[in-house]
Image 1 (cartoon, helix red, strand yellow):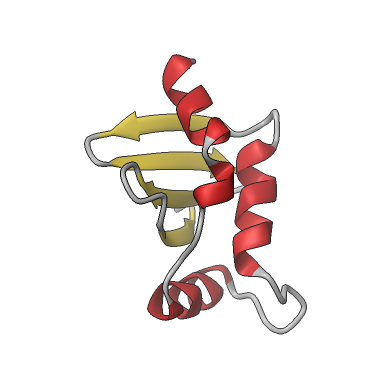
Image 2: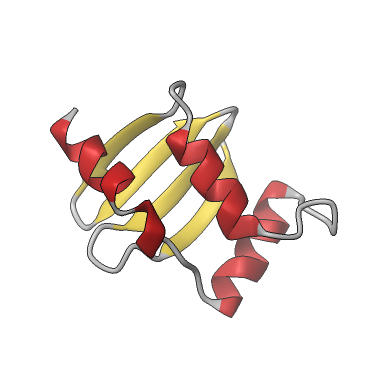
Length: 84
């Protein structure tokens, strides 16, 4: 639980790159109906239903049938994809 609190305490630092933005949109099938992907990811991570774990250099947030991957040092959203 302590580890997930670290991610939650640093949500203001959460961001992504232009390539990451495209990758997340493509992987989750978002169109223009989700204009702010970073805000959507923050909302998912903040949810009480989110299962947050850290493995190596990344955080993994599992919620609503998807996994959001965040770099633990830079708080960059690397990718998000639907769970298989």
